[in-house]
Image 1 (tube, rainbow, N blue to C red):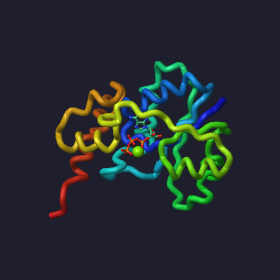
Image 2: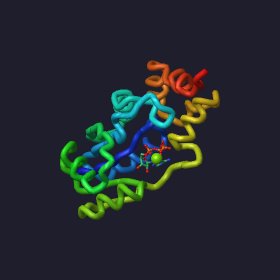
Image 3: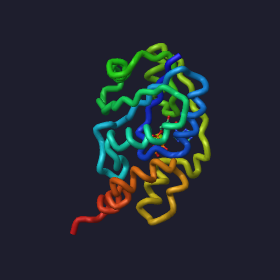
Image 4: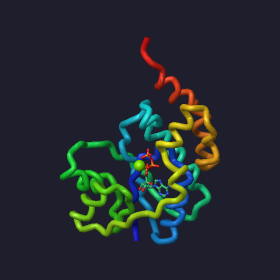
Length: 168
Ligand code: ATP
Ligand code: MG
């Protein structure tokens, strides 16, 4: 069985790690779609697809799962979006998503769509973690250690703060 999960992973956090660990017990292989892959350097999408791929591969190093990370850019054309995903990924027979639009589009094409359970959503949330980075609050405990290393390497927190500076 080969499954697909799509996220923006901005950044890859402990909730993502937990759900992938759980899925890894249910499937043989996992396709991890990097959604909005063309986006970076904005407050909602600060990290590039390549940086997000580094976060994922370093975090999953010790998990016993074969996976493929595939960048998927936005097409703004919902009715053909599933075909575009299929054109980029290995074949899959199951989809994991918490997003209602993604669920609808894959279900209409006949896929089995499962809703991943959420772990500590109050804290394990990309939006909340990015907010903490901006506000000098502790965020490091909310992501895998390797993600802390990647964000340090690229000065990700500095990037987010600079992006938030106002024009004069
Ligand atoms: P953002 O706030 O930027 O949308 P996010 O935390 O929702 O970030 P996404 O990249 O949007 O993260 O989500 C990717 C996938 O991970 C989705 O399928 C989502 O259901 C799942 N996910 C997100 N947060 C958690 C969590 N705390 N526990 C389990 N799964 C999660
Ligand atoms: Mg989300």
